[in-house]
Image (cartoon, rainbow, N blue to C red; front, side, top):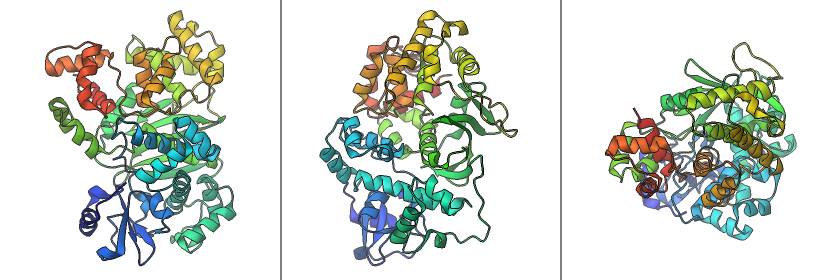
Length: 491
C-alpha cells in the first residue's frame, strides 16, 4: 500500500481526525510509531515515514507510542471491499480469519488453503496491502489487546497475558520488554490496586469505531430480532448470552465515551476474550469506514439521498454462523416477528440453560442450541412446516460434518455456491448469511421482497429479482450496505 508522504504529513501537521487509523506515523529519530492525531510535537518531515497499519510499523522495528496509544485507533476499513477482482478482498478475508484466531489454531499453510491461494501469494498480498506479514499481524493484535487491557482494566498481568493470547507470562514479559524497552508493569501508572476478573471473568473495554455511528438504527435492528431468553435490550443497552467451547457467559454493549462502544464481558475463560471481542466487532460492524462507503454509494442518486439521511448506518453482523443460519431459515416466507417467536421456542426447548443467571441481566436464561442437538431433534413439533424443520436439521447436520461451513471462503461466489448446495437453502438465505456472518460487503439478496418494495417506494416501479440485480451494479462493491439503507428506508 503506497501512501503519499506530503498528503500524510499535512494530515499529521493538522492533527486531522479523519485520518486516525488510516495510517501510522513512524518517527525515525525515536523509533516510535504514533497515530496522526498524537499530541506530541510534530517531527520534521524528513524524520518520519508513513505506514498503512500498526503491524507494518511494528514489523519495521518501531514501538507503539505511550501517549497516543495506537491500540485505541479505530480499525481502518477503507481498503475493505474496494476491489471486485478478489485481490484486496482476499486480504480482507484473511484479516477477518486472523482476527478470529485462525493463526492461533493453525499455521500459514492452512490459512492460505482456506482462502484458495498459495502461501507465497498470500504473503505478497499482505506486503502490498497491509505492509506486514500475516504472522506479524497476529502478533501485533495480541500486543495491542494486552496494552489496552493494561490501560483500561485493573486485571493482574498474569490474567492479561492469557486473555491477550500469549502462551505464557514469560513470553508476555519478553515481548513487552523487547518492544517497549520496559516491563508491562511500567505501562500502568494508576495507583488503584489490581482487581481480578473473578470467577465470572468480567472485563469492561471500549471498542472504537470510525464515526458517524447510527446506534439507534443498530439497536432497533437487533431489538426487532431479539430472541427471548437469549437477548434483551434495556435502557439503550444490548444484552445477550454467549457460548464458546462449552462455556457460558454474557455480554452487555452500550454507547461509550468518545467514538466507542462500551462492552462488558462476563466469561469464565479469559483465553477466549480476543475471540469474543472479534465477534462483537463483527456483530456491530466496527471496522466499517462510513466516509469511503458513503462516498462510493453516493455516486448513485438514490443512494446519495439515503446515505445523507443515515450517514452512520452499519450492517449488523452475527454472533454465530449456525445461529444466523437457523434464524435465516426460520425467516423464509414469514414475518420477522413470526420467525423470532419460532426461534424463541427453539432456544427454550433445545438450548442449554445458562450456567449462571445474573440478577442485573434479567431475561437471559439460555444459550443458543448446539448443532448436534438440533440435528437429532424433531423440530416440526415447534409448529413449523415439516419442510422447514427438515432444512434446519440438514443445516445442523452439515455443520456437524463440516465445522467450517460458515467460515470465510475464498470468494463470495464460492461461499454462496457452497451454502446453496444444502437442501432448502436458496439464494436469498445464502446471501443473507454472507452479509451478516461472512461480512461480505458485496453480498446482495436480489430476491428480497423488502428491497423490491423499497425501490418501488423510491423510484415508482417495482423491479423483479433480475432487474434489481442490474440496478444494484451501481452499488458495487458495497451492495450489502445499499441493501441495509433500502431496508431502513421502508416506511
